[in-house]
Image (tube, rainbow, N blue to C red; front, top):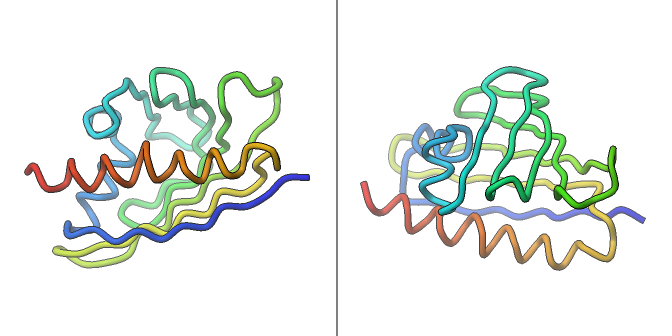
Length: 130
């Protein structure tokens, strides 16, 4: 049975800056500390964390939403979950609401903790540097 992770994180940085950190390959690599290649085209491929995560871009609305068909590279071929980043805020503060659905039940806790450790904590640190 697949499961769901919902998380909401606030940052002391503008929504455009936070969106770019998630959606731009160079910034994504900088805050995670691992290579990322993120397509800017619908249906385009992406990889993050040095290829450990891969998928396709399903939706891109600048400063509002990113939706990805998302998978851990060692999941069975064709097995994907859906990651939805919703951005809100202004030029000084922002919030990301993450919905990650279709996660294999035995991996939900690990993936939920991974969002905290591999995304939100380093992103908050990255955003204080500029």
